[in-house]
Amino acid sequence: MGVAFLSSCETEEFALDPVFANDGKFLFQTEKTYCNREPENEIWSKSFKYDKNSNLTETTNFYNETPDSKTTTTFNSKSQPLTDSIFYFAESRWKLNNSTVYIYSRNLLSEKKRFEADGTNTHKTVYKYIGTTPKWEEFYYYTDNQWKFQYAHGFEFDRNGRLIKKSSYQTAEKDKVYDTFIYAYKNGKLVEEKRIIRTGEISYINKFTYTSEGLPFETIQDKNIIEKNFYTNGRLTEKHTFYFGIDPGFSQCNGNLIYKYEY
Image (cartoon, rainbow, N blue to C red; front, side, top):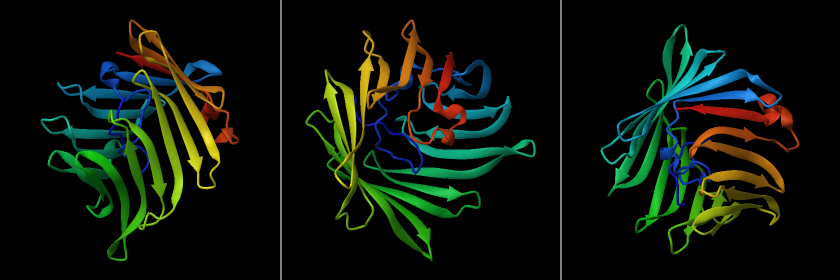
């Protein structure tokens, strides 16, 4: 398992996704979500569309069966993303919220630019490499007619090209680590993620287990199962999540959810 190009929050482009880094084998058409305590009452759902190369081109979110938001993505001939556009549904039509443009240099992602609905470029992410190996991911925002540094990630890889360390920095000088993520592998699969905060204390340890077919099975955080996956004929059909944090009210159903997938 290597580095997955993903979009999340402020787009951690080189974040590991231990469950779905290779989700091309799970081209589900819908994802329906339920509370663990009410497994028959759907609370929201998503629908997915793909192109002929199995690239995810559209995700639409529904609440109470009503469209809420959607993301559309375009790709180049190498299946690299070119644009992301995020829309919200209002007044019976889709309205653009923001969009992102991906820029490549020598076939490597070099920059991402985020544009608001009015066309204003408000954020950008810059990627730096040693050869073809990612080294830095730097986030900037535009204010007072200039680009200002926001934060950065630094990466270290093993000789097999697997991400083994990701460090976060809050200053442009990158002179003090804010937090660090350490990754461990066994038989070519990610088995542990450890987060160490700036005080040197361990924030959490995630352990990952797999089925006999090599598919992701459980995610265990500090001895608690926080995610469990179920398969039928080698395809993901259901996922359960469990929350054990100090503030369960942050998420609907207190973070205890059931996701069901249809193909």
